[in-house]
Image (cartoon, rainbow over all chains, first blue to last red; front, side, top):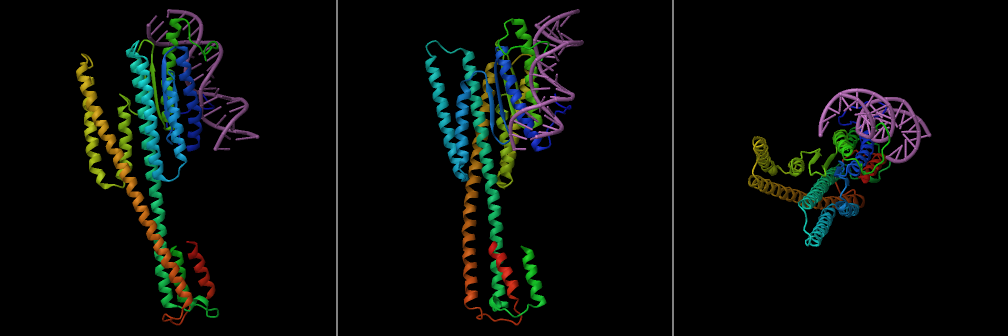
Length: 205
Length: 205
DNA sequence: TCGACTATGTATAACGC
DNA sequence: TGCGTTATACATAGTCG
């Protein structure tokens, strides 16, 4: 359904994949909506991009609002750059959201107590909670993995910087012993040998 | 996308609605599958017909949605074990255990398909899976948090070490200027220019 | 990178059995 | 009820700006 037939397999080019994701995601959510309206059935679609973002459709819309709220919580937290803060904040956000979810649940249960919930109602409720749980957990894992990855990179950078500093220290001490007058001598050409040493040292950087 | 345009609204004729449901359901599930494969994202679709029948698609294994969790666990463990060797063993153990449990589950479900499992059997099975899930999840979170904590400590140490080295470097360079003749100079100092270049390069670090 | 366009492949409404 | 066929609407891959 485009200019040419495409195989159903993972798209290699990242940009193409991103574009296709955007288009097809939209299409899928529309079709889910159409199906639920036209055929009068319950439909839920959850999509998690590999960058961890959540897209969803739910014909029984009680879950939608709550999940969006959760998303905005997490998004706000994402702004904070310090890694551990991200972890802790998202933990807190998750807690709050779960609390809200439970409150909502309890309220619903209480409200409906008089007339009684049908088994179907409870099944729906269970599905919604299950979905919320899965998304929350998935998001948690994603954030922590990101955090770990970032810390590893930072660690690598620090170690490299460290190594360079040590080398410099060693070299300067060496130079100080070998040619301490070097700093402000103007007229003395370097020997061939020293030049070689220096260049070798610099190349090492 | 048929002989004539249809409005997106509930189809009145029951038989038409049923036919449309069958076709569109199939289409939706296919598109969900395509999306998950082509764009390499997680997709889950749940459809409940108004007669209560369940249709679903999940890009990660979906028997109950518990397997989805299992997936993320394995992924998490992969990442973590790269840096925590101790994890290796427990990871493998958990894998085998969960794997066996799931195999057992599937076997039982298949074997008993004709006669059907009793409700008691299923409740028992559910509890077992639930327990395994909780333990696995708890372990995952623990390991990741430990990992993050450790990395933060390591980072702090590296930064301190870094600072010390920088201080040393600064002090030594200072000394070199003030009393450059103090050290035993040999006979061949480098040129000013080359030294300058060197220092500029080093300062940049 | 992003939205708009368009040629083309797909999904499906209606129909027949 | 369900499957196959066909004409048509729709979704989208590639392209351009």
